[in-house]
Length: 113
Image (cartoon, rainbow, N blue to C red; front, side):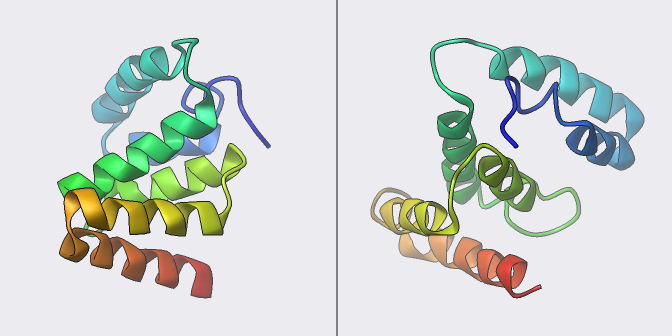
């Protein structure tokens, strides 16, 4: 299922954000929803970009980690596991092998469940 806006149209995502903290969830939904509503970059590409940012920021583990949410978001927008793996390989070159390694580990856990 692809969404016109991967933040504003995904009630499960909004519930997850609110579950971290209601004010945080509302803030993220409003601000990110506006950014995801910009028209020139499609939702799948935006989702892949967020995964790349997670690699650089090392945001793949711990409470409130966005990496798994962004992988799920990308897949809802039509990205495949293979595309995400290729993105992580690409990120090795520009962000560093060690940064991508943790993301590969989380991705492996996600798909083994």
